[in-house]
Image (cartoon, rainbow, N blue to C red; front, side, top):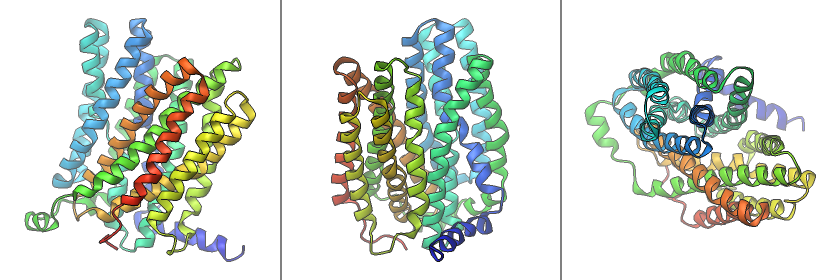
Length: 399
C-alpha cells in the first residue's frame, strides 16, 4: 500500500509538469458545452415548438452535425494549427446558435432542424484536441497512457456535470438560458484553451514533414468501431435505466442511477496506469468488452428493482473508463505525426453516433418489451467490443 499510492500520485503529478497547472481544469471546463448542447437543444426546441418529437429531431440533428463536423474541424486543425481553427470555430458556433434562435422565432421545422445541425457541426471538441496535444507533449509512452487516463476521467465527470447543469439552469431560468450558458462557456473556456501555451505543440508540420508522415491508416476503423460500441453502451444504458426508474414511479431517478456508473469508472480509470505491461492492450480490450457484457446481463436481471440495478450499473462502470482509455491509447499509437486531431475526432464521432444508436434502439425495446430488453442493446455492444479485440491492430504500433 505504501508503494502503490506514491507511484500512482507520481504518475499523475507528471501531467501538470508537462502542460502547466491550469491545463487540466481548463480542458474540463472547455468540454462542458459538448455535453450540454444536445440536451439543451432538445429542451429549447421542445419548449418553443410545443412538440417533443420536433425537439428530439433537433437534438438528433445536432448530434449528426457534431459527428460530421468534429472530424472536419480536426482535419483543418492538423493542417492549420489548433489555435486559429478553434478560435474560428468558436465564432462560427456562436453564429450558428444565433441562427437557431432566429429559426425558432421565424421559420418552420425544416429550417430549425438545419439550424440545429449547424449548431452541432460547429461544436468544438476540446477533448479530442486535448488528446492530440498530449500526443505531441508527452514523449514517454507512460506519460501518454497517464494523460489519456486523466482525459477519460475528465470526460466521465463532464458527461455527468454537463446535463446536470442544463437541468439546473433550465429549472432556475429557461431552456434558452441553458443554451446561452453553454455559449458563454464556449466563448470563455474554449477560447482560453485555444490560446493556452500548449497550442504551440500542435503547430502544423512543414509540408515535407506532412507528406512523410503519411495518411491515417485504414486500420483505425477498428478503434472507431470500438468507440461506436462504447457510445451504444452509453445511449442504451441511459434509456434502459430511465425506463426502469419510470416503472418504479420516478423517471428522474434514472439520471441519478446512471451517474453511479461514473464512480466505478473513475476509480478503475485512474488506477489503469498501474497495470503491468504484460497485460496488453488487446487483452484489456477483450476484458473490458466481456465486463460490459456481464454488466448488461446484471442490469437486465435487476431491471425491476432499483437498488440491485444501481449496483449493476456501478459494476458496468468499472469497465467503461478503462475501455475508453484502451481504445484511445491504441488509436493514439496508430496516429502518424501531425494527424492526431483528425484521428481523435474520428473516435469522438464514433461515440456520438453510438450514443444515438444505443438511445434509439434501447429506448424502442424498453418501451415495447420492458427495461430488461433495453439492456439487450448494451449486451450486444459489449459482445461486439469483446469480439473486436481479436482484430485490434496492435502490431507495428508506435512506442
